[in-house]
Length: 496
Image (cartoon, rainbow, N blue to C red):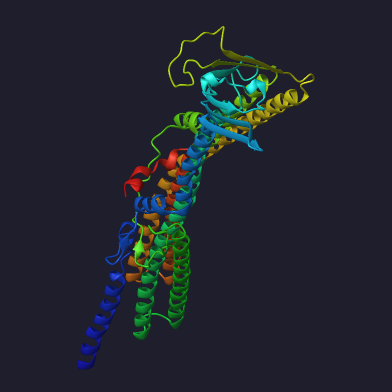
């Protein structure tokens, strides 16, 4: 009787221990799983974008483009720079001064096709060409001041004015290209961030599932030692635990790889590449919002402001300049030159009266190709380029519109799917908790627990994957609409 009284309490103690062990297994909710670890250094999306905009080589390369465009404008405006020329020609033979000819001229080109110039001549010599002769009473010096005016070809536009207009349009094209380059770099960078984000939280969820499998395996072994379960149950628990270990290792590899891919976009101030550390982690953000703009407003913005469409529009303006120049070249060239002699400043540097009918030089130059084949071909080529660019622009616009609508549809429907997945995670969590509770009562088995655990993990990973998919579709939407810097604050990176 004494031996029975000893074994019965011991048996109840063993049973109670097994029940308590089963009851202690807690299914951690997704909100707790994604809480940052104490040792983790948070790296938010805003911080990441800030580093990319400040230091990424592609962004820095894009920021150099406006300077190149400014120099193109400067180069074109160089055709209007004042020009000072000089010439001195002397011949002396057998102590005879054949001639001593000196000329210096200052030309000041203006935007309106009038080229003022002032010239100073000093000519003397025994064998001087008569047309160069200047009397000794004027100390062999003469001042001429005048201008050249095209009254035919070149009156409304010429090559140098067209070059300036083209350069100014090129500067605007460059700005559109700069925004496009930065947007492209941001698109790739932020997508890489979301891949890293997904792999990190996938690893956290698989790791939590491993903790549950490990605890179940440990307690099944303990129950087997007390004869509560069959040996095959320990094998099943061990297999599940091993599979969870393999899943965790695979998730860890994905996380490491995605971290290395993310490091491709991380650069220091001195252009040294950076590598993201293992203790750096993203912050969980479940507040997934729409871009804040309707589909119609995004479409309207894209049609009017998309960098690619702006480039086409500016190219059409450049071709319009070419077309105006080609039409101008169909006119005959008629240049009128008029120069006052010793007026309004004479050879002594004093102001003199102007007499348009006396003391002047006048010239007229006329040129006109008879067939105009070159000019007509240039005009036709320009018109063909205008038609081609117009077709490309309309095609690109339709592509952009379709991309915007597709990305918007994906984002909106993805948000609806997100609600379903959140509900599924909650339900699978309840089912797993119920199975663990049933196990504590001896009314469940490992197969059911493993099944529910697999389903919960699958639903959790689908949830985080869907959240990332929404963010990527939002990103694609902003990219398709041509939003500058994808709505990230570029000025913050510049201030730093």
